[in-house]
Image (tube, rainbow, N blue to C red):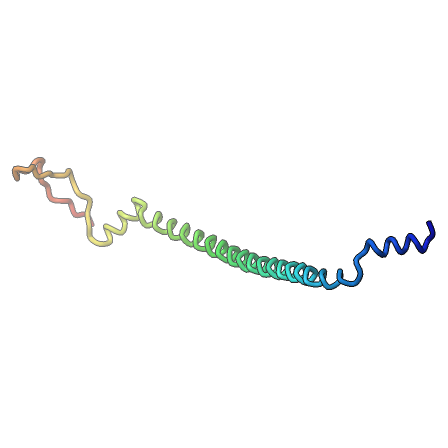
Length: 120
């Protein structure tokens, strides 16, 4: 078989001219899909970065507020110490109470009522 015969036979197997017209819409579709996919990934990445920065800011604020809460709790603990409470009560003119006296449901008094001793 000659070279020209082979070329002629191969030329008959390949469709002539119409293949470019059929491929163009498919190529455009693939390009559009790839472009929209890349754009979507870009927007998603930007959104995740924005959320990450916001999360970092909120974590810092949480840490600051936790520190503030602990400092306030230490102040409250300092004010509620028994020695501090006694000193503040005496400063207001209060004195320690004696043995407690109770009222029974029938109105009778249980215990001996005594007046508190005032020491200055």
